[in-house]
Image 1 (cartoon, rainbow, N blue to C red):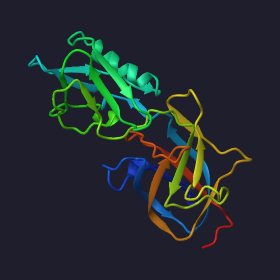
Image 2 (image 1 turned 60 degrees about the vertical axis):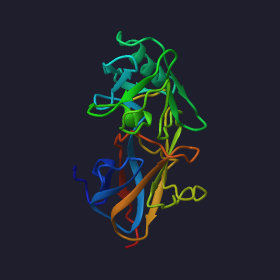
Image 3 (image 1 turned 180 degrees about the horizontal axis):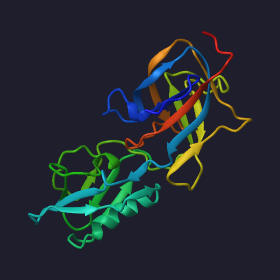
Length: 249
């Protein structure tokens, strides 16, 4: 872990107490104490998409009911918006050259479940003994589904774009925005931008918190502008705090 001057601290979701935790709600082991006193946010690095497809989650395997073959389809890697991810999934299935082209994708912004269907045949989605599956990305548990024409995800996902990230550190409310109870920092997310957001607070929008006791382990939670959990599909983020000179020990 990178070392910083003693009046700075880096908080990185990579160092989760439990590596199996999702990064949107996890406990973080800190490199040193987050000391009692006043702190200021100086930098925040955040993956600006909830739909990141990489070599660890870019495969979906299906088996048609009238076939003994399991066909593994590859989703193009990259950053996807709420509009483009469904198209990428269907392109992988219908463009494999080994399956019929009857696959369709539906997402409900009410239930936040997705449905993968085939217009012509029953099929199952295969996860057992498959590597780099997109199960978590799409909200499916890693268990083979039964044969059916429609497969609804068991987990909730969020394919809506986010415009603002609310960050909660141990439920501490920001000094600057007391009306946002339990929100420590507010991070604006630029529209139509992919990759990572490098956020440095503007001079006229500084963000501070007061820590009432020394902490070596903290709980981090991420919410969108509607106070819904933001699922990053385990993508990591980090931020840096500066301890102010007029802090109270």
